[in-house]
Amino acid sequence: MLLSTLSFVAMQTAVKLARRSGLDTTEVMFVRTAPGLPVLWFMLRRRGQGIRPSVPRSLFARSVFGSLAMGLNFASMRSLSLSQFSTLGLSQPVFVALASPVLLREPVSGSTWLSMALSFAGAWVLLDPAANTQQVPLLPALFALGSALASAVAHIWVRIAAAEDPPERVVFHFCAWVSLVALALGLAGGHFRGLPAGLGAAQLLLLTLALSIFGLLGQLLMTYAYTRAAAAKVSIVGYTSIALGVLIDTLLFDIPPSSGFLLGALLMLAAGYLLVRSRTRAA
Image 1 (tube, one colour):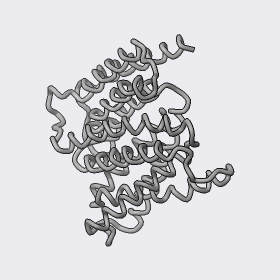
Image 2 (cartoon, rainbow, N blue to C red):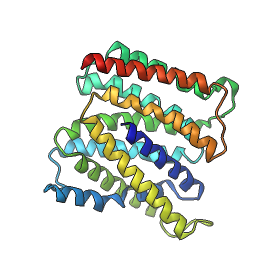
Image 3 (tube, one colour):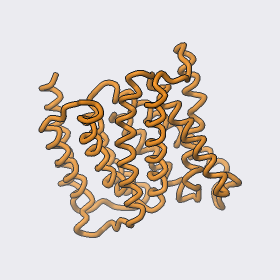
Image 4 (spheres, rainbow, N blue to C red):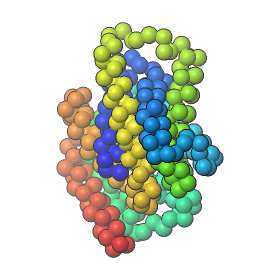
């Protein structure tokens, strides 16, 4: 899940650059998912497996909620910084933890709840909202929260679907669904008809490679993670995206961190320590 988070942060950086370059949400969604389809098909064929799902209902639910999460995610990235989006996304692991006992019948320990609270507090301090150094626009913020909610439901269905279908098949159906929906909506909205002004073919190729490679890698690693550990504990590792987002905002987009960065980082480290200790005791 840590490697998945690193991949997704790299992908989000490419999303931010793509939206700044003038690409529409549907265009970014398409170039994020479509190039990975032949790779996933080859991986399945090499292992002697097809693309036909064992449990179509689970894959369909995962794909629908996942595409909704991606669409809201990419729409919000036009106005939000990486650290702002990651902070609002903190609600996603909380939603996963709340839904896991109901949908997956997984127990959530007291130390896991405490680590979640510390992580949320750490990320909140990390951005120092009281100082108003980073204003969060309302509509993109609502999009980010909606993305977190849809993503939480999608992550639960990832765990359910991966119990019957291999991770590559789960990701293949998700990418196929997103590609078709994004292409249809984009064409209906007048997009996919040319490059935005100032975006060259070479730049588009680099953005496409970054979106597809890091997005596919993150998706596969996340699916593998959910097949190997409890959903609530896996999802909390994604909190590391806050520190990574602040770092990239500072170095690439010239958005410096707030004065509460060190305190927030310490709280997040404390949360990670509690989580690791709870895993060790469980083992």
